[in-house]
Length: 399
Image (cartoon, rainbow, N blue to C red; front, top):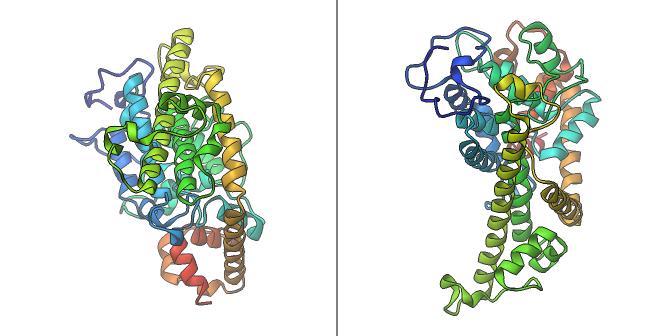
């Protein structure tokens, strides 16, 4: 890579285009966009990315238009990651690319769909590995190659944004790719950009699941008094009991519908939670960088632990929020009932295709696999995992 792409402002340990290890298939450089901008654009224009708008985050698409979907979640992760990258002098374009691509492999019905697919097929399936399979094989948008032909750095980030991979499953797409096509140094730590994408995912899903939980009336603001970080926010409001004098704020001085005021209050809580997490992460990561003093990207990969991290106090606060969500939201009877219903649908559909392989559209099979050998289980997994909530419900009602 010879072009600069205005990356001179980046820190020495940031990923730079000039040092990219390239792509599987050589391509001419673009005069306007950096390699990571091109990766981002390829993801945004992919059919897999578009389908995320009808895939479950927590609430199924049919339950309401205002709940998060995998698409809106990915966009929110991207926004947080860009903020973090800019503050820390890292490559914003790569952070955005990894944030937008991190959930491409999700099944319909979210994690419940993933569990159901594993149970129904008795095969290996992992949404992170399926994301990797999508960008390296399943997407069919180019005449010269399958997949999106992304850069080494993007593929590395997609593969190991959660950390080093010591024991890779031999049935995974990543295993064969890493062994036969491109070595992604899976046992080392990921780039700081990949670490940013991972922690941005955590910040986004925790806070926005709280927001969606409020909307679904699964819990109320006073219940958040159990959480240390929320108690801090209540003190900022001047109320220690989980309440708030809404009429002290400029937008709420006039008498309004009480429900409207409460809605603003809930959104303010979530907004301040996100800001506290972002500020803490930046401060702690800067401390870590000053301590480790990495001189380049290799120093980051060879480190003994994640460099991008929260303070110990914030880690404890986040653990409280996760436990709260697990109890009050993910295991709420309303969510559990829907989870069980949708798992049953996916399992039954898998069994239907297992017994009626010819019902999978022949055009899709030919376009997806061409001269590639694939067993029946993998074909059904690829087909069902790519479905949206809306499409799978429509198909299920017809069989």
